[in-house]
Length: 285
Ligand SMILES: Nc1ncnc2c1ncn2[C@@H]1O[C@H](COP(=O)(O)OP(=O)(O)OP(=O)(O)O)[C@@H](O)[C@H]1O
Ligand SMILES: [Mg+2]
Image (cartoon, rainbow, N blue to C red; front, side, top):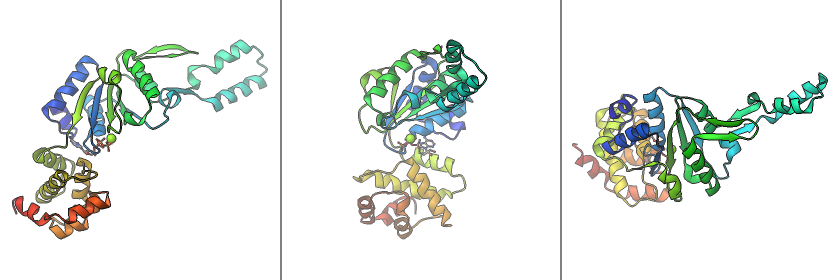
């Protein structure tokens, strides 16, 4: 599992490799929780690539409902069909109705698409942003991997999709939903693994620069920041410095490019007060 994910450029530790392996073996969704930018969403893409299956993504948001997540009827097309039938003099109301609720007028949203596509990886991203009602609906769907459309009947996935749920923990997701899943908490990676990720994602960036940026980010994370930087920010920062044409960074340049990595004024101010030169010196200057 680890090797297959690493082939896609996604580096996992033992805990996550085991969780992924079990998710596939037991056909259980994997529930990924952790800070922003630690690789929760990227795991789903990596799994899809490793399995050679399409990634089907459902982005959750406040007020999301079944018609956005599961299916909807294509009303304008149904209307057109009705007009055309009327113009052709079709009078049989029953026949017309059954035609209107034909599969071709059904718009499959991500959840239905995932049930119909085999194999597939279904990413239910940021489930903490949806409301309780939607969570209950999701729970039902993930228990049965089937859906009943009143006009068409029940559709069941032969092979259930591989499901990855993510949450930033802006609120607690219900235990009932979590119970269906294998849970994995995403910590920020340690220095060695984060450096490996940066090197892997940005092969063109100098080894020295990658190492320095990783050391700086690790130091920033140890501060009590409003928003600790994720791996995404480490990659962004290294990329930004590389774009400036440097192979290594000093404290002055680090401060000048802090906007790549810290997104709160208070955090940036705090970073400016740190002895970044010492952090850089500590890392094999
Ligand atoms: N273990 C990893 N291996 C390789 N790349 C990683 C890893 N973890 C994170 N990344 C990189 O970090 C970036 C951010 O990851 P991702 O968007 O998946 O974070 P997230 O946890 O979903 O964040 P958010 O909560 O903000 O959505 C991705 O572009 C990915 O390339
Ligand atoms: Mg994400």
